[in-house]
Image (cartoon, rainbow, N blue to C red; front, side, top):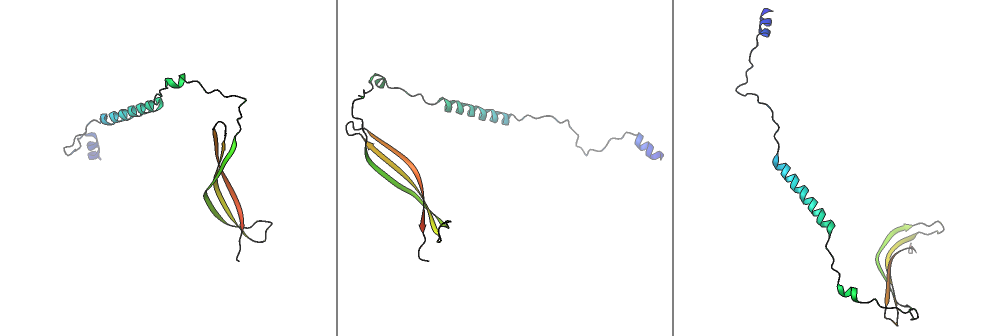
Length: 144
């Protein structure tokens, strides 16, 4: 026991094999800070320029030109000039068995766009309205 006590009491240097411990220091990466600040500045400038938008110049001629006067007594009647129906998608949704029918029906869904035109013959003004519509039709299945 005496040898153990003596070994513990002695303060001996540990072998480091030539590598001495050094104090850890905080190294700041200046490159990443510079790149981050550059990217943030670019984003702020882009947002500022995007929100500012282009300045629209107004023509002084449009401010001088008087608005056309419309007479209340004029015949402002629009006459239908045309109707255009365009089917831009038709989809077959398969067989459907309605409750009140003994035979199966095929369901067909059509997407169309309708354009109505009116024209005023006296003034030459025209009006055009377009709207989409959807139609579901049931077609009886034959040949079974």
